[in-house]
Image (cartoon, rainbow, N blue to C red; front, side, top):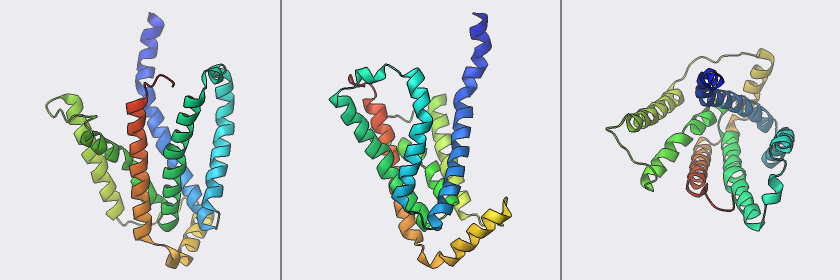
Length: 216
C-alpha cells in the first residue's frame, strides 16, 4: 500500500510529461523534415525511412512486452491494422509533408496543434461528446479548445525576429528556403495541412468508437 501511495504522484504526472515530450519530438521532426524536403528528398521516401526507423525502434519493446500477441492475429485483425496504417499514418502524414513542402515547419506545427480542436468539434457534431457547460470537465474542455485555437491564431499572425539557434544549419536552411520561395504555394499548403488535421481527427474518433471491437 505504501508503494502505491509513493507511485501515485508519478503516475499522475506521466500523461502530462509524455505529451510535452511528444510535442518536443514532433517539433524537432518537422524541423529536420523541412530541411531534407527543401534539399530535394522525395516525400514518400522520407515516409518510408521514418516508418522503417520507427519499426526498428519499437521492435525490441514489442519483442519483450508483446511476445505472444502475434498468436491472436487473424484476418480481421490484419485488415484492421492495415486500415489503421493507411488512414492513421499514410494518408495524413503524406498530406502533412506535402503541406510542409509548400509552407514552413512552424506553420505546419500550428495545424498539428489544431488536431485536438478539430477532433473535439467533430466529436460534438457526431454526438460522441457533450458540452456540459455547467460541469468542471465540460468547462475545461471548452476553455482548452478556445485556448488552443486562440494560441494557434496568435502564433500564425505574429511576425517576430528570426531566432538562429544553430547559425551554420538554420542560416543555410533559411537561405535555401528564400531561393526556392517562388516554388511554394501557401494556399495549397494550407489546404493540405487542413486535410491532414481532419484525417487525423477522423482516425482518432474511429479509435474511440471501435476500440472495443472483439477482434482487437
